[in-house]
Image (tube, helix red, strand yellow):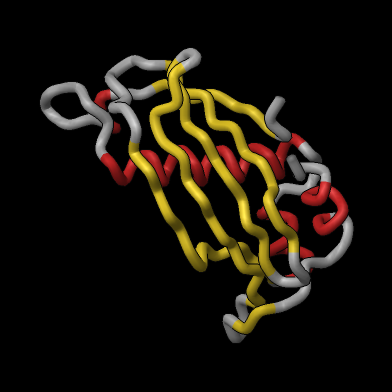
Length: 135
């Protein structure tokens, strides 16, 4: 069972003329999955920015596209924490339609202070909550 699961529908705006989801939209769906994981845990990214001036930025991303996602598909985004460091997280995200994996993304996000874009330690309670995503 994944640490966090959420679902989104593929709309026309996500697809090309043939009804196949654009490759860049996989990244957008993964971003939404990460945001929903935080929101549902009660520690949204907006609160991290408001209280601490800290944001998550993608530092590294590797995507393996396995099968196309199509118009009107219900896409499940599973997010699992693979490694947590003081100022970064390594996540594995799987996008699926039904029981069929469509893409696997390995994403490293860093926490940076927005004032100077320097890495900064993830404060509590975010560090503890994110630890709960470990799989």
